[in-house]
Length: 91
Image (cartoon, rainbow, N blue to C red; front, side, top):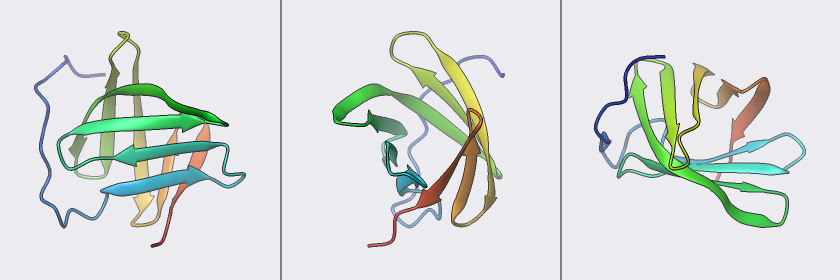
């Protein structure tokens, strides 16, 4: 995991922005254009919040509580993160 870095604002049309959800819908993670994320778990909204940086197809997370994690976008609609698979929620 790289050293903590400043929040990275992504262009409004960045391909990874938006809502990502697990197949069962229990975990929902929104990647915001401000370089922040908001993760809901089950009925618990904003269970985790923090910042993220995307480098190529790799994402690093720094939760506001100090927890760090990372993931890989395997394609435009699939994210592997924390042993889970997230799918882009289509509007």
